[in-house]
Image (tube, rainbow, N blue to C red; front, top):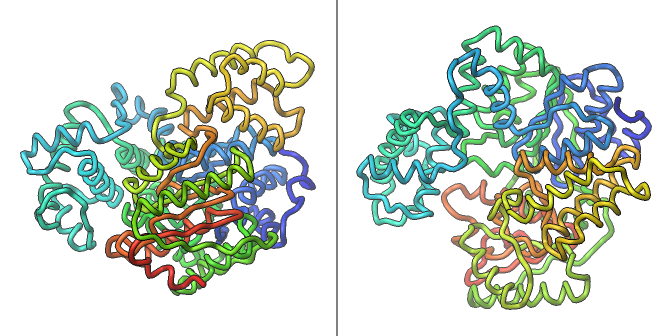
Length: 550
């Protein structure tokens, strides 16, 4: 049973309160960056359970990253709900596909590709095309295949579709895009053939197969619809046509759905995402409640003012995105620094971070954000030269590290023993002490402290903590490691830091490609990751986006 309603409704503003109390669908929440949407939608689920509108086992909350899904599950547990399902689209589809595979398809479940690069490299050889099997080229081809598959574009249709969509490629050869599209079409076909021969599927296949299963098998479809009757979709502006098709199958002719999104944060159009479903929600559901969250609780008025300026600059203020008002105290005005070279920019940022850590402590939250992965290398080197620990987001998988697995084994053993002195956190500190002052120990303890602060003492034990870790391991959602975070703007979506250095804001880099408006939205997302201080920098010619900032 969820905690009492008084606790669920406590400290909510009037708009947030309206969302939480709108417990029957359809509901559309337009939520700007840092407006507390995750708290609101999880509290809404808890409030609905208390009201008897739904059973927790009938809840399916969908989002786009393992980290976001993990945060939703943690918040639901803090509200006393441990058996509601909060997953990514792919995770939810995979769970259903695995369960019904023997019934719907028969035979052994295929192997699931966690990365496409190996198969794509083989496909290039089979297709006999002149594409260098370099990391950047493989990544580019993988992105094109993923785009085609989420839009259900076959290899034969790919060239015409890519030309019609104005796709651009960054493949290290001198061929025109049309010639590369033709080569990719051949690689795409060879890739699909290779998967069939090896009885393998990729993550896009998971969605396609689940859609096919639900469309073709009425019994399976009805069983799934009976299982999940209360749907919530976060980051709805990033839904692809294939994901929307799957969502329609889950929903059926019901309207008990709540979607949350912000058109100003649509940054995955290149991957097939479309804000059209958010924009057209009230057309599909004319009786939908539309509620806007416009009070920002993440960033200072100065940072939000800068973000609002970018919204105005791009004409992005409208029915599905709006200016925010900061609820926080005033802070420093965002800084804009110009440099003659990338090296000078990196050196300056490393010095600024050194000064910041000397003043505020080593554990202050700092991130350097760039448009591309390649830009991060120079910052990593400069930080290393300055003796500053850093981590590139999405590098080595945290839970696959041997030292991390050893530590979890010890935590698992300790979780079955009685708590000494009545404090599970002290027990955790004790069992981790032999592992020393390492990054993962700091990460484990920071997560434990966060759980201790967010959950009632009676609801938290070492076993509860272990379940959280195991849940995160399953979803590849690691706790936050210490050190400066290095991340691309896309990978930073949904995250936040006290201090953000948005580097390389130069013409030709940001914006990059033909879709200037999507790049502007990407810039907006980067700005709104900062809580207390925002630093903008560039070398050479400034990005035209900076002209909107005073």
